[in-house]
Length: 429
Image (cartoon, rainbow, N blue to C red; front, side):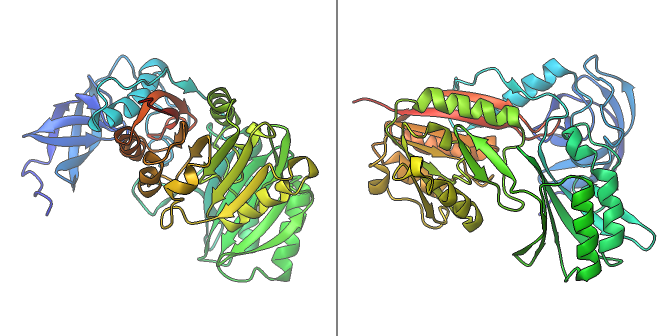
């Protein structure tokens, strides 16, 4: 049960640190007070609004003394839109804070001096995938992102994080939603900037009808989309496929499934691929766990044999299509498998020279235990969650691996999320 709120709700406090979610943190009678959009060193008038675990959440009413590290935010929607939390923090302390999210997560798991490299930056305007939420109103449509910890939508007109090609679609997509969504309904719009154009998937309830289909097909033509699809209850209907959206991975081309997963930026993806190529360049056989469309492993072909294991059937079908190319016969194989429920066993992992794993935010505890017992000389982890990565790293190290290097990658710009790629090597007896 959460502790009750203090009798005095309005306070003037010193902000001490910046928390893992990007909130300034003060202390109230031994309890942490989280104040969004504030910075260490600031004196803030705030109102306590609700508990958070053992701590409290407050809203800043006035900043009486600003930090020297405070800068003007890059976006007009900052502070309302829930996408970004630290646009007000200067570049150098921002990058140090991002890197420290990984360092502190590893220290909490017993890594006293974790080998975390300098963070790799991604500039603004480079995010190549996003999911927008649309809500049809009586007079118009709202299109944007949810407010922080809220179901309310922020109606955005721009987003400095996105590629200009995606940002340019915000206003046209809002107008499209007015034409194709019934009043009161919502939709999720996934946009991926593939190597030959934008893939757009609209996920909503109900059949759009002939007129809406024609409107969406015309929209795809007018805005030169590679593909526009409608997803309803898991079933995908291609509305307009003007060309197959493809990604170039090493010397290979893979067709992107509708709404498929991409790394958030090309720069971040290239950084991960470069590290993996350097670390695993001599491996003859590699298993790619939670492998998606093979983004992290296909660049190792044809020098290495690659086995991709992925739960998503559409992603597996895309890799299988590439595997049928004559040059890759016998070099690339695919397995559809839910690794959270049915991890690849140690005996199977022992057949490979190296393993790559890139799990969702929940991490890969079950699979990490199998890897920890394996004899694979090299393991590479990719993660977007420092906490679950540190837990899985602890499992591997306790099983006899050494954590040799962690490279942070800031491809979730101005948010509390950070990507990383890490190398583990089996200790020699």
